[in-house]
Length: 498
Ligand SMILES: Nc1ncnc2c1ncn2[C@@H]1O[C@H](COP(=O)(O)OP(=O)(O)OP(=O)(O)O)[C@@H](O)[C@H]1O
Ligand SMILES: Cc1ncsc1CCO
Image (cartoon, rainbow, N blue to C red; front, side, top):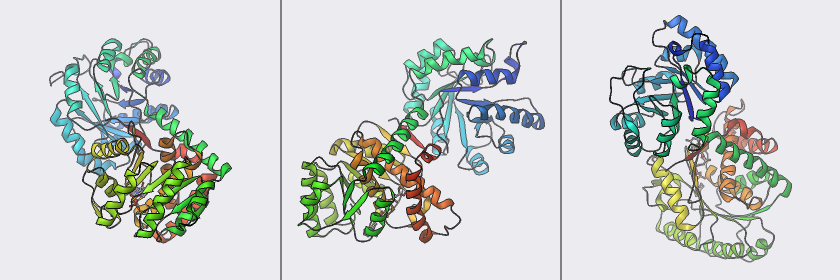
């Protein structure tokens, strides 16, 4: 699913267009003025003319790279391959709409009560249309208006989810709404744009007001991708040494992955040389996968010498909850105060965060307990140990204790090979070694590189399953590192607001 900017969401109504202007002309002007999303809402058109009109609107929205949502009519949305569909409480149920429309498309749901919002979130809506906040002439209202407090009450009762508020919103009351609420992603406007004598000007004014309160998720994503591209260049030009003390299952794969991105691996667990290696080191990757008492002792030495020299230390607490031995050592390493980035799978990080992690040996089982639980787990753990925390899984969550980011790249096959999480830790080591100005972004960049490489690997015709995927993944780490602008096309990052 693409990252969507919900800031200024136009809902069309052909009956409102001034006599001297045209419907498509108003939409074009709105797009020129910066609307970030368009919903085609035609209650009285027959299917044929609706499809015809939808194609014309889609041609316009495509020009501006703005997603097109179709109101109510899944058949029309499917016919024209729209980006999404918006359904009301009396339309087709969300679960059926999802079955027909698939996971890659946007489905929004209108909600007027806390209960409706909670059900929509539970059933997997991509965004909510919350309203009507005020009375509106564009729709016969059958339900109560919410007012600002009603909107806030709904937002407070649901986990963070993209949303737009709708109903009688103009420039002034829109500002009042955004000033007095938290968690609104955007405003949905009908007459304020469709009936405007100058729709472009109206949109510009609305958008510049909204931007004072709502951050465009694309801006955040672009900033991180830009950082990631430069960070990859730094690895290639500086080729840092990355000292791994890792488990003996993944040692060869991790060394090859490190080379593929342009860094230089040294895989040593010898206590007699760790202090010497620290002197020439870029970063240290410590992985607890096959920890022994001797290795644990050497790791503690290495942590101290690398920390004293200011080198970043990446700690992967493999199987953190599986045995008493691992539980004790996870705690000990984290409490040493030397860890720069803690990177674990969902079971490991949720265990450390005391938020319900489940594991079978070194593998994570069960989900993350929902986005709020996942985001709080990384945020609280980052605060507790004063480090960056990355939790991998179907969605990866990364925090520095202040901000939380979700990365939605990756492919299922990553979970079918051993050591893909360990590979992420290796690559975090490569990024942090030479990108020491922003360990949060460097960690996200590393996850992006591995997960996007995995998406490219899966698409290859020579990849037939986990075995061929494993080799293709190393190829694609190499290929993407050589052409990092690919990240712009693939990255799916968003900031999670708690
Ligand atoms: N279902 C999935 N869909 C997409 N990407 C996934 C999925 N599961 C895991 N990943 C990705 O796989 C990588 C490894 O994450 P995972 O949580 O499986 O690590 P792990 O359990 O520590 O792996 P290992 O112990 O085998 O090294 C991450 O980049 C993550 O984004
Ligand atoms: C399978 C396995 N066992 C110990 S470490 C490891 C690699 C994945 O973490």
